[in-house]
Structures are given as C-alpha cells and as structure tokens.
Image (cartoon, rainbow, N blue to C red; front, side, top):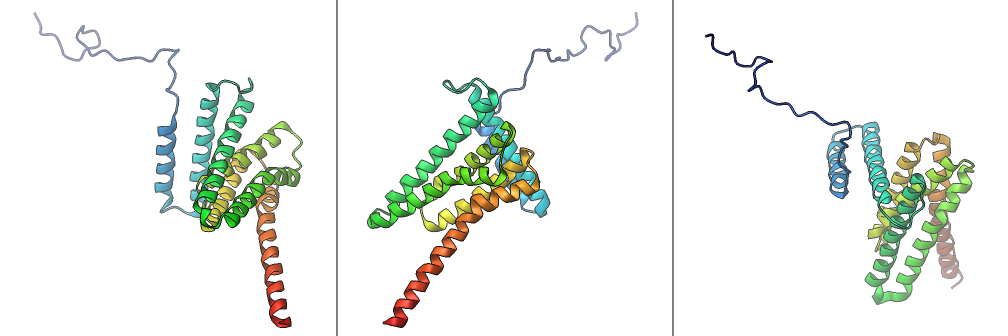
Length: 227
C-alpha cells in the first residue's frame, strides 16, 4: 500500500475553503467607519500635494454622503425616494449643528448678551440665506443640480457646530466653503458653476463684512476729524 500524498485535491482531509454565497452583502458602514476613513484621509494629507489633498478630501466627503444615505434608509418619516431621503437627512443634520453653534455662541457670550445674540443671529442669517444665494448663482433647473446645491449647503453647515466665537466662526466659514466646493464637484457640477455658487454663497458674506468694516471706520474717522 502506498502512503497517501498530502495536499492532493482528492484527499478527504484537504482544508475546506469558505465560499461566499450569492446573497451575501458587505456590512453597512457606520459612524465608526466614517471617523476612521476621515482620520486616515487627514493623516495621508500631511505629505501630499494640493491636488492629492483635494482628492483625498473629496473621497472623505463621498464616504460621508454614503453613510448618510445608509442612515436615511432606516430613518422613519422621510420621503420614500432614496435621494430625497439622503438630502432630508443632511438638511436635518446641518440645521442641528447650526442650532448647536447658535446656542453655544449665546451661552459663551452671556456676559455680553446683546453682542452674543447679535453675533449668533448674524451667523444664522448668513447660513440660512446661503442656500438661496447659491441657487441663484447656479440657476439650478434640473433636480440633480438643485439636489447638489442643497447637499453642499447642508454639509457646509456641519462645521458651525463649534462656531462659538468670532475666530471659530472664521474657521467654520473656511471649512464650510471647502466642504461645499468638494460636494459640488463630487455631484458633477462644472467648475464655472461651482465658482459662481461659492462666490455668491460665501464671497458675498465677505464683501458685506468688509463693507460694514469700511463704513464703520469711516464714521469713526469722520467723528474724530469733526470733533
């Protein structure tokens, strides 16, 4: 009798190989996966070129949109259409973070309640008006264009969760503009349309602040000269 050869395909003690079934699906991505992906993207950005940074950040934004889409599928009370459900979820998340920033601004500045309320109100006014300004700039006619504007606006609200002071509001504005740019590009809008949307939605706020600063200082200088 010859000894049995190890490793032959016909041997009964050959290792069993697990095979995936046709109905198997990858597990849904959750909040932990989103945080890990964002952290990994930021870590990889440290030594990358500007173009690579933009690509990595766009990847993170796309992943965030995917997670929001999956979460919206299990949220009751939202529209049946999957795209509308995802947009509704993004809007709710954006408004919630904006409300957090408004409350935080008022609470932190309660020593000077008048100025803190004015600051919070001005921040809220610009954030809420931004979606209308961006829509006017792009002149969105198709549902996909309108959805892209709404998603970019809603995602751009997320950084305002920590906009409790003027410096933090400036940081939130910068990050918001970057997120809106990446979202609009990911949704397929042309570079010209994206530029117009950001110029109206974010640039108009800068122009208004600069104009207010010039007028205020002009009054101060005029009062000093006349006095």
